[in-house]
Image 1: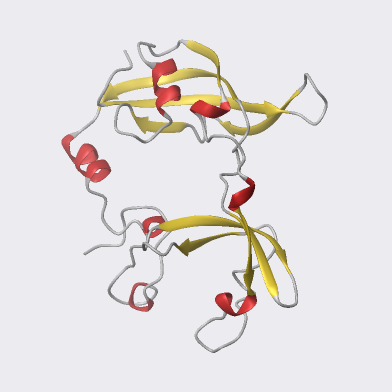
Image 2 (image 1 turned 90 degrees about the horizontal axis):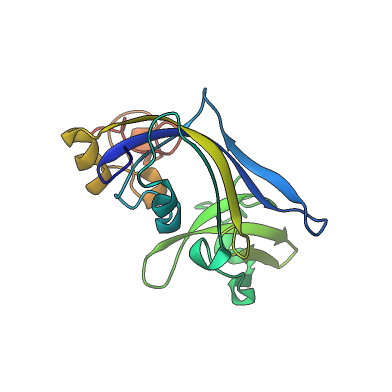
Length: 196
């Protein structure tokens, strides 16, 4: 049964509001080949998602909706920022067009040093427009899926979740030879595999 410190494997289709009123569109899927795997109660998923999944058993189907205020909040126009192009120059003093282009998501630092993910809306001659809202801000989330497996989390898994090392998406850099020596992310930008 799904409860805290259980590793859950599930499939789902995620629907959001479509362009036609009253219709939904498929936004994302977790399939049997690429399922959702998370540890319940460890903050890996939205609290409302975990609340809806609690108590389910392997084989159980689910179909629930999370309101935007319980998901990623309302869309905030203040999250749309127009910044000078110079902020996006690379170490050679040139505009970083390999990373900063329309439709890409780039990590940025706040004044407090926190890393946020910014969606590049427009690249103009003198400015770059970014959107700091979550891509699903203002959306309700409709999940339809099935629980595949529920098992106890290992001590190692819980330690990795609670004390991640070298998570590139969190600003960590890899050390060592090759890509690691350049301070680049290893693998797909996830945790593990970077080494000490």
